[in-house]
Figure 1 (cartoon, rainbow, N blue to C red):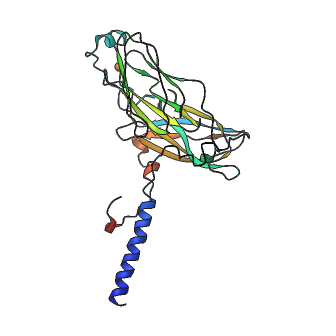
Figure 2 (cartoon, rainbow, N blue to C red):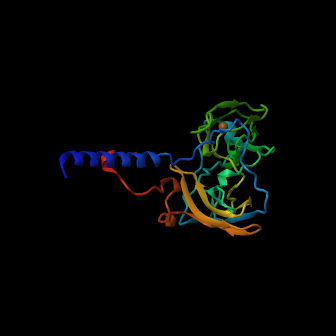
Length: 291
Ligand SMILES: [Cu+2]
């Protein structure tokens, strides 16, 4: 092989590696795809029978004990809620609450992708209340553009401040006695952290979904996703944390069937599958650096 051939060989390998690396760069949850045909919604609606996915979320090992929150910064909080505790790991009898379980993607019976279907935006609103200087619920889901109604049940002022990555960030005070604040998010996002600028311990998480195919585990760890078209799906269980944890599971649903999918978090579960966002081929191309 002469020198010129070698140079061309190296160049073409480098180019094809570049192509591979750029094609694997977009592996994140993205907002709605732009509608390219003049604005008419073309996505089909599923009209056939549906099934459900349900299960229980467990916590293995000893959960971190809830800590008492020092509410001295606002005496009103302490008066109403003298035993305010952290709520990032709510475990009862080994079952974990506040896990957001949703269908990420999959193939619906008949061969189309789940993303090829659309669902109407519910006309019902979802409520996020501030009560005792605590968000209730702590984890909730809405559909894209569904109304979120934020209420203040406290005799003090709150300042609701979601910090999304894909949606518009906002930050609004709500004095005691103020009317509900109504908002919506126009892009799908897993999940938006919400804080209160008045009370740094207040936290909530809002999942914004294109489908109604999600649920949050209750204080018994149980969840149920209803209205699922028959198909084969990747279901994700999402749990808050410094780095949120995501556990994927493949689940097959039949019409009128009820599929079971149990998840577990906690110490003993660390050897299970890594978050789906990180399930990329473990191939590194040193010449291209990290991407
Ligand atoms: Cu507050």
